[in-house]
Length: 144
Image 1 (cartoon, rainbow, N blue to C red):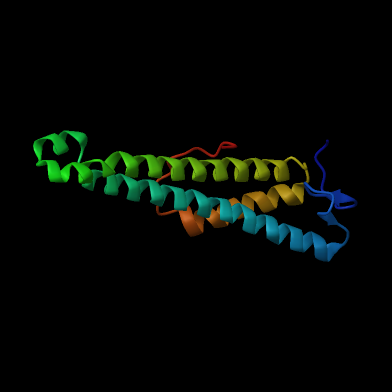
Image 2 (image 1 turned 180 degrees about the vertical axis):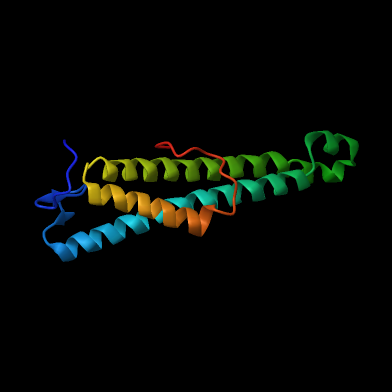
């Protein structure tokens, strides 16, 4: 694979995603911009979910609290481990979505086509402006 600006016989990730004319090139580039902006949206959703889980977990009674309270509150105290486990499962699922998404974007970039590479960068730019500019970055811009 060599870097190129050619769109002749350009196939993007799948055989069915084939650029055959100027219209399909422009449509593909717009789709790639939207996909990359969507990745930033997924990252923002994940950050917000993690923050809300932290707040919810602080409000739930801890295991130490349940021994200090009456036995009627034992059921309430046991809700904390269940809530933490559920939030960890959702966080893991969101992380898996991010990893899959980021590797797909990497495959787009690895077409080594200048137009596709620029569309990825433009999508990241737009996505960051729309979804990530107000939130401090917690993860690097690596593949995942």
